[in-house]
Length: 121
Image (tube, rainbow, N blue to C red):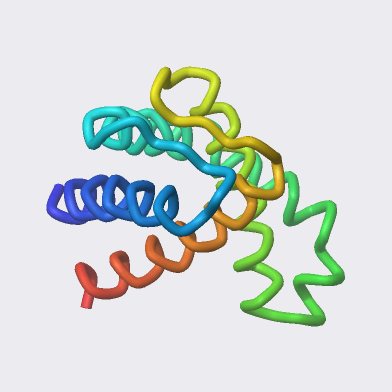
């Protein structure tokens, strides 16, 4: 439970920071960021694992060759898809381009890894 709360708060914080740093990303307020974090978390539980599995099958050899970096990139791509879906569900979060969502997803995936390791260890 602590890991879930920490992940949700870190994701909310990450969305706010990413919107300040990325020119093509807009988050209206803290409440919109929190709603997006909860929805993206739920989507990750329901859809994220399936997407990761399917994309891992498609990109099996690049992941095999590049190791953890390949798995990280697949996870970032899954998070990009989840962010784009979340954008359509939450009123206060917008991405101008798909590429902006990809950069936000890379940053949020790094943050997600750091928080998971900090809470677990």
